[in-house]
Length: 386
Image 1 (spheres, rainbow, N blue to C red):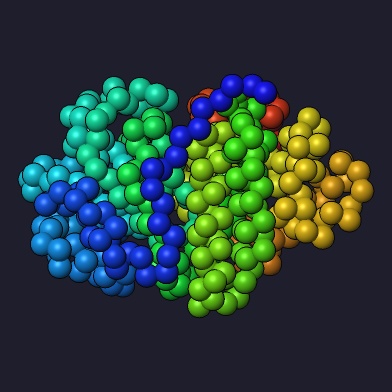
Image 2 (image 1 turned 60 degrees about the vertical axis):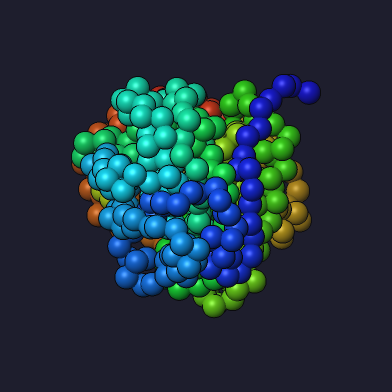
């Protein structure tokens, strides 16, 4: 067996209503003065109220930074850091989707270490220490609460990442009640995002692909595949919501240690340039990337086909089962009501060549793909998705 490393969040609390127990769960970890990072939509909906009330009832001073946008910018990160500095905070809470959690992770790092951001980009570069950190996801998709990665938009389009185990939080709180009011489109897109994480982690060509990540990816696919259509059709189903939240987290643990690949690499220009939500960006290219990979990865994809779609166990032959999996994933997007073509989200065909060039900049992801990709290959995939 090949050697590997596996890192994950120290403590995970999975319980409906757990966010209202934030102060009790975190104890003295966060100190007396907390920076609470979220987005304006969640603040307006009042989803943060129970968590904030818990901190305030415990006598903890709270500075709320609620200006995180989708695909968060470096300017937003700087504003969050300024808020934390002004309040002399002792700990950080990230509350929301992947964008809020990404800002919280880097804010905790830079407030704790005073590192130069420009020297922290990349894999294994950031050293810390960071401030105490608690993450509370409100979507079942990114798995950011158990990943050592944060993605920030620099300038108008470029996405840069920091990847270091130091970004893993001290505590992740999984509260399914926070996901009950998610619109169906967001529920669907983030659910597919989690499925992509599991598939890419399982098939990753990264040298750290390992038995733990593979096992977690398969269990994630079982939970996600069995519940994603239910949560879209029955948004108030707490049991199904909890299964999706757990599946998302397991997929996050998998890809945190066995990194994702070309689906994500090709999704980034879609989100960065055209501001398409990340989960939908992944869904738009997923079947096309898998078809490209199939000649070398069909046996791997066949192994997990029935985890996501149990009826595919009846399909004989690895190549046929792989093809059936890809068709089932494309059909899933249709059934969930997601757009399935780039042109449907406002991307003109004239943009595809630049998108292909931009995707080739994602070398940290492309290197994990089961099959090597050229810029011309990427362009053909975009054309197939258009």
